[in-house]
Image (cartoon, rainbow, N blue to C red):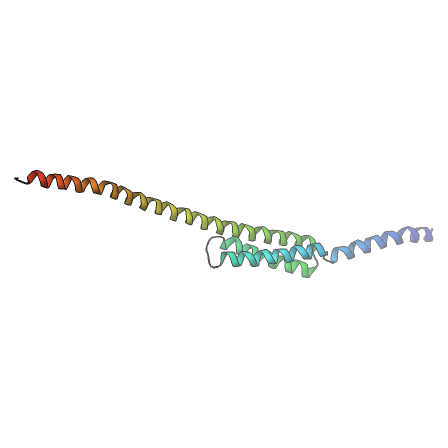
Length: 144
């Protein structure tokens, strides 16, 4: 009976040990995700620069990346994966917010230019009529 239990328990123990060993290591896929997240955060930093738009999201991305690095060091693949994904998403959001703010500013500048051009066009279209009236008024005052 002892030999039966030993024979049945040995494969089970081997399977459990292999499962636990797999949990302790970080897969290449997860390491690649962390590397992609690092790249995304660096690119976001370059895109945003010192802009206020997207700064909060960039800071969250950096914090998530640090969490991913710590979880990877601790051997927690699931947490590493989660933090790496959050870092990448926050970096993308930071870039989007920054680009949106830039586009909004460009649109506002364009509207201000259009307004200025319209005002100048109105002035120049009314100016000859005013000059003509002034000339006519001057001529009617002339006693000749």
